[in-house]
Length: 194
Image (cartoon, rainbow, N blue to C red; front, side, top):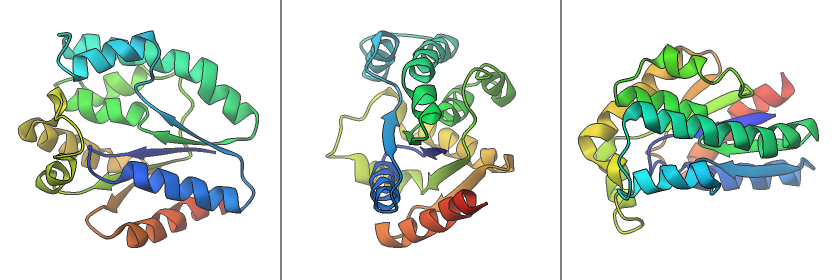
């Protein structure tokens, strides 16, 4: 199984990813959590852009993501899936379909560039108001280039627009972690048992 957990920074997806891993492993599943961008060379270019050390157009950023993601699929994601491991993605190509679309690219254009990437079994998008997300992030990390409120509003809208995709589920991330996880587990269980 390939499960993609998505949302703007501060939405709680990393917490939910860990809770999901714990629950699956209790049930005897082998799991791995993988994050994007990676720490490989193309991923490092992205981190440089995100931290303002390098300038890049939206198209160039997508290009770095594609190179980073291709390597990630070849070296980590596909081998894990081939071994029967449940792969939990803390961001995957659906984040490009939100962030790069918020920057002006067409969603189908971004999606079509990912024909090499295995399709998730389910995409969980943790949604909450941008002001709440920014409050949670402040004090945890330096706000990077993409954490400006106006841009994040566009990212949030782009994420919500992905609900037309049959594998996408939007989750209210304003609740406490246990309530959120109960919903996460119900949704994942449907796919596991389906």
